[in-house]
Length: 116
Image (cartoon, rainbow, N blue to C red):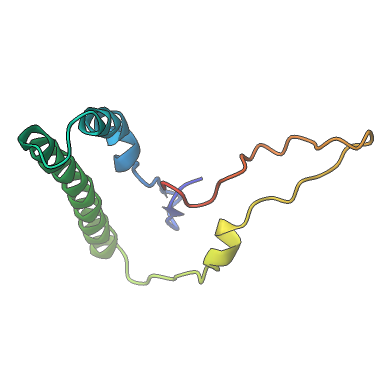
């Protein structure tokens, strides 16, 4: 599933900046949890974690501006679809099989727009 498709048939995927930085972030957070609160090494690690979050946010913003420039330089009209976010957050309903057990629907208990 892509972010959107142009009328020329060009598929544009949403980049997953957070997922690419997730390993580095989790390692830093584990190291931070082992430090004493308000210690100097803890403060240094907090700064590193904040910089990594800032990097992810800036990557997203940069990608949005570059994508908007790419789209607006080539097109004469843009159409938008009104999505209902509540429907995107909702989980699939569980279905029962013949023997009364739940059938797998490929969806975990907590899902939706969590990271993406």
